[in-house]
Image (cartoon, rainbow, N blue to C red; front, side):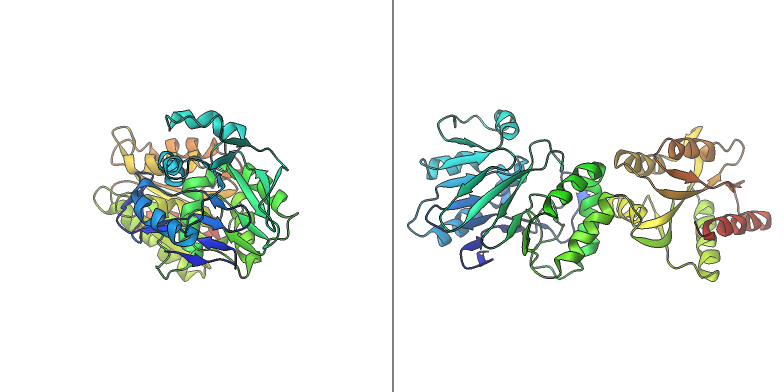
Length: 388
């Protein structure tokens, strides 16, 4: 779809509602958008490309905006294939075009494309500018947000930040849904490991007068930007977004599930602000990771399995560790019929994470939930409810 961002800046991206897994692993029930933009001026700049799946729609949108004009520049801010897959065809269609990016990206480009662009390269670095006429582009390096070659571009006339994967979200543009939910799930699963680089970029962005944010996924943001930037400040600093308890469980025969649900019942009866619960074997792992980062407290409940921990819980904890989970309090419930060891192993994993406090009342269930176990769950609930 082609649409106006401003008088001279046009959206030429495309929705993909047929893709079921983003990056081959994240469920996207409402698809995803691949965003690209064109700045029409004395010199014409294309801002990024789209995935090969959307190439036909993208070129049609591009031609509608360009008419009989030819683009002068293609700015590539991020080399991931969902934003750069059409480079070879762009070079065929527009042989005079110049390719603008940074040295790190150009160094990685042969990994993806067998094209000769030595005579077409315009290499930019931090603070460099490119005049298109009345529009001037300022280039800001953003390494490890979330690849090493990433840069963002600030257009000073319309005060637009072309933010690469920053401020992106899952979901096609024609989907009506809460921005924060799918942007949060996108952030923690795609970018979450790289909080410090995101913080560094936000510090640079704070010096700019930004009126519009144009990400590579999700809607163009032009109102209440403080809200979106505030979310990124919270997420990238790993601070909890909401007060509440997320209970993540795995259960072989329903007994650990019963313990997790009983704890949720106790917490809700005690007036805990928010209690969320998820069966890790049945619910979207990416959404579970999102909730673990969203709330200030986490409880993991799992049975001992093959002298270890039930695999889906191992996977959940692995994801948390990979995404730099920190600054949280964690409660543990284990189950085991003859040699429970899940609690010990889960505790070791969480204690290896930064600023994670494992609560003292580790609850051990011996197969089925008994009256004494409920007393122990109440003790764990009281510890979770303590104000820190």
